Length: 378
Image 1 (cartoon, rainbow, N blue to C red):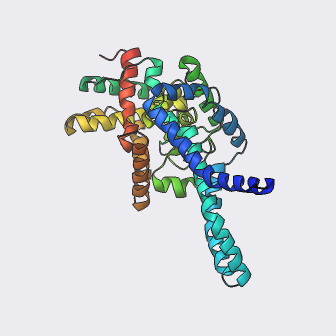
Image 2: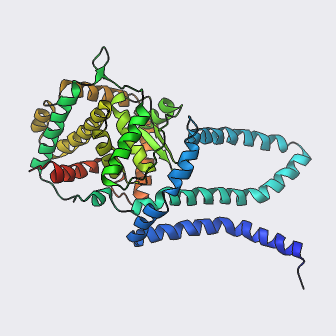
């Protein structure tokens, strides 16, 4: 029996509706498998295909001065109770029940489509890049096991740089660092462009970083300094956190926009870009964060007495700002922060970062390799 043209088109549309979601998921899984098994594919993708996303999606969503991703999440959170209320109201009438039955038939398919699109976009803008060439390899430095003497040497070099910068920054009446925010985003982009000019591998477009409206309520309570949205290619930073971390965090998130997803490498890129910035606040932020990770490494590897001696070598300005940051984040410790940390840890492990949240601290290994190659740690 021959099908009429209209019936054929109808059946084809129905088949596409049912197969579209699974096909998108299958495509994403195949691309992830290729990136895991064939490192050359991830490198090729990062260089040839991925730049389309920051240049198109990043530029478009960057036109908005607010976080588009945050607005979408807020809208979704508001739609859920409204939708539930509409369902309850419609259950009270026969027409409403009829419409709900029709909606229930298509809702699972629509949800599958939405989740499939979300997954595929994540794979294209972030997932594959977890397998790309490391930035350390790209700039020609070798990460290797380091001695305790090298770690101490790195620390002393950072302390010397901190002493130099501490006298050039602005502080408030209590002696805490105050960030000069005028031109902040331009300095961030300039520092990333400068690093790309020197080593390459970062692309040529960096969007304006955005501070979510709910920085304190959501980010601080979750112990989050910043995040990258792979669906809108937006870099976000917590505007409520202590000023000394902000420049570094902005460049960290811009490193993610540039396609470097591993946290230790985003930290390393942020350090290099901030350290060589024209803005002294970025330079100070770089040495502040580098010292915080280096001190954590020393705490795990030296006796308490030696650690205290090394800590006492910090300039007063650094000790003051470390104390302020500790007090700030301690105020937000609780179940929400623990849940967010565990969630982030699981996400990182799922994306081949076996150290989980500890992978941020592997920045010290990269710093040691960099200083060993260029500043002659012995």
